[in-house]
Image 1 (cartoon, rainbow, N blue to C red):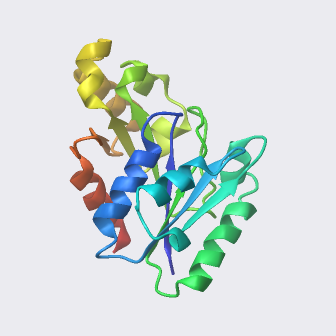
Image 2: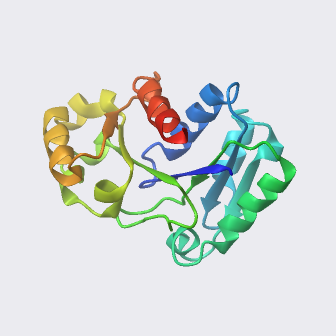
Length: 197
C-alpha cells in the first residue's frame, strides 16, 4: 500500500520547495510520485519537472478549478484518481506526495486521501501566524516553519513562534527550516521515515 503524504500551506510558504527537496533527497531510497493541485494551471507540476525532482511520468498536475480546498477535502476523487493512475503505472510505489493548491489556514486533507499531513508556513508572514491557529496549524502531523533566515528582516521572533507552536499544537512536532540552504530538511525526512515503518 502506497503511503500518501499531504503538503499544504499558504501561497509562497515553500510547499513546492519542500516537495522538490524531499523528492531529490528520498528518490534513491524510495519509489516516489507527486500530485500537485493548482486552480487553473499546472505550474507547480511543471516546476517539479523542470527542476528534475522526479521523472515527468511520476508527476501529475491536477487542475482543481474553483476552490482548491474541495479537491483535497470534501470531494477528493480527482486526487484519488491521479494517485490510482500512478499506482497502476508504478507497482512498487512507496510514497505519493499530494501538494494542495495555495490556501489559507483552514485547509485540511480528507483522511481518505492522505496518511500523514505536513503544513508549511513561513516567518515572513510574521510571528503571530502560529497563534492564529486553524486546522493546518493545530491538526497537521507536522508543522514546518520555513524561511527562518528572513526572521530578523521581518521582525519575527523564532522564540515567540516556538512558544506559540507548542501552545497551539501540544505534543505535535514542528520544525524550523530554510529550504534554500537545506537547514531542517533532514529532520523532516526523519519524521516521514519514522511514520513509514
